[in-house]
Length: 445
View 1: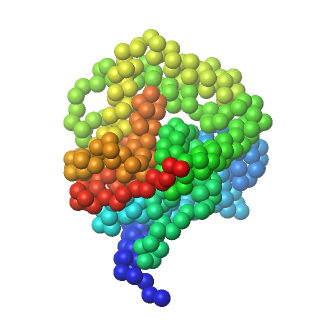
View 2 (view 1 turned 120 degrees about the vertical axis):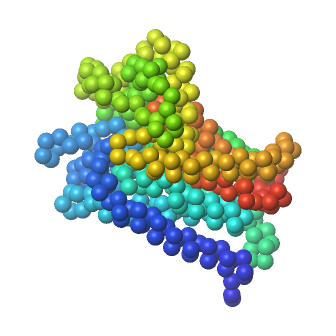
View 3 (view 1 turned 90 degrees about the horizontal axis):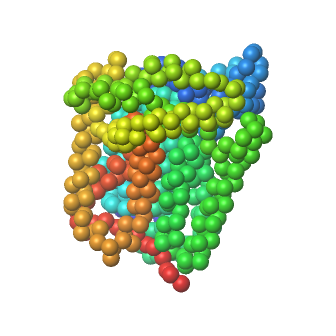
């Protein structure tokens, strides 16, 4: 039996997207393989140590390892499977891994936009994600932005896919029966998100309750499905917590890195920089130089217990906040604007021309989002809220990132998980006023 016209169009678009990912993302990674040598967050070290010693930790001596919870477990654990027999994690292995994750991000973005908007908007949204400078650059670093973005968009894709009416080849609705299986998969994806970045726990807490309003099964089955998802998340995060009780002696559910991140955002050196900072054009704006902070941080007394040291960093940050409350409030505003600012900071080796190009591209995305909001403002009437419930994961990721990184350290790369959502919202500017597809929220019985 031949494919119908709509299916052929979707298949052709998907093939074109895969080819574009191979060319654009693959070409960028191939030309920036040397950047993968860097290991700013010790993910490579932990992965190689895990592969060599079966201990999630940092190397000690020639063959020993010290257990750690300094980084969340998912990314280094996955990298450990790519370590070769000599105990080395090659750049090419990481590049291929990031290549696949980047491709999944583009395809999931396309399919979400296709379901919620139109085929044309889907191609635009996928294209914006494909060429996004932040995602491109972060894919050439051994850091979590690439996998975090792929996981976040996969959650939204799964929700969009399973909260809209299922239809057969003739366009007739078909019933959904595997709601518990769908809930199990959703819970697994959210658990993986949290084990990649603890920030996603806030996102999960915002997303799951709203699912009680969505779906094609009755409200009692929806409640059961949510309970299933929560149970899977608790099991996944609980396993990591239990491991940490045994390995480092404390029930750490996320990482022993939160205190450092809070202190990095709230210390006297950074506050002084904000007080003395002159006005600069966006493409000439220089970032804070943290050398003084690093020196002061190294002088903090160390106990050898990473959990206790993290608590000490928390205490130091809280002291700074208490002593300079006005600067704390101002720094919150600065961190929020830095998270979403279109122009990256001027740093050594970054040309003003590149900063302007990247900033203008992001300005175009923001302008398109504004146009989309104005074009579809009539859809935001309270009586039409059901139509937009499937967009809630995107709204929730914006709220989550804004809320967390207003207090903790922030820069533009930390908005990476929201880039697919921003791209889809921008693509809505090219959709007619009556075009958006309705979203099924199910029966209430």
